[in-house]
Image (cartoon, rainbow, N blue to C red; front, side):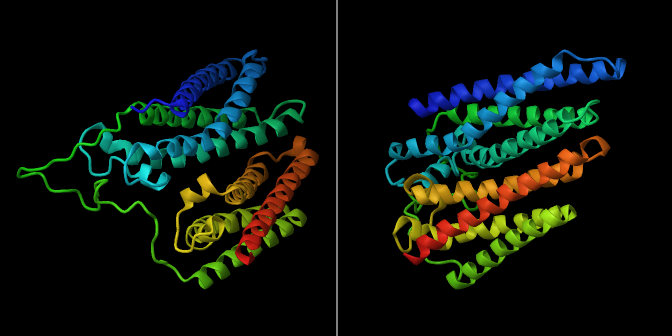
Length: 336
């Protein structure tokens, strides 16, 4: 276990997130039981649920970048590790608790954006439900909250486990079963410099990134006129994510860092303000398209008709603006 300001902060946020997740799950369960026994009754727990979920949304947004600040703070702890990428590989091939560290990092890199999306989806449903007189979307709102609470518990447990597990690696040195796992590498054997040769053609990747960016912008623009195209915008955004991640590592990272051949997304997050802005805007574009799709699919109805159209439109406009801004930032960096 490595104690510093960031690990203590992550531990505190993890405990808070765990408490909020458990409280949300328990309160949703009780509210659902109340609805089954008295469908027309007013449950005093609903305002409390709203407050809990609002705090959980704030915690989820804070905990996502906090993960990378924590990993960056661990870089000086090992000789040969020069960036976050090396920290994510600590424990690879180790026996004992340290061997689970890389898996925990991958889990956290999935659970944190998933939690932000889930709580944002709840916020979309809640806003639409509050615009009605009879709360017809309450069941869907409670379902979304149950997912939020479950994801929050998983994320909090993974965060606390990663902070609490000692970062001392142990390797089997001899014996009939001391065969290294496939793909495993010890710290002394690994290459953590991230100075690598290009795995993809930069021109092809750039063209692909431009194409998917234009597709997202056109799809969101068209969806503003025909809301059913929101699902098309979501599909374009889903395709843009893997292409954008590869483009960021192979093409944009060297430009943001000013280091040709330094292909590392993590270094962009820790060493480039423009790179962080690009990632934040791109993530905002994808998330808001996804929330617009949630609104289109689950927040519609006779009572929400007017509000629903405005809600989907606002989300799509934010998505389009964020996507264009992200493309502009990386375009300027590539041209300079």
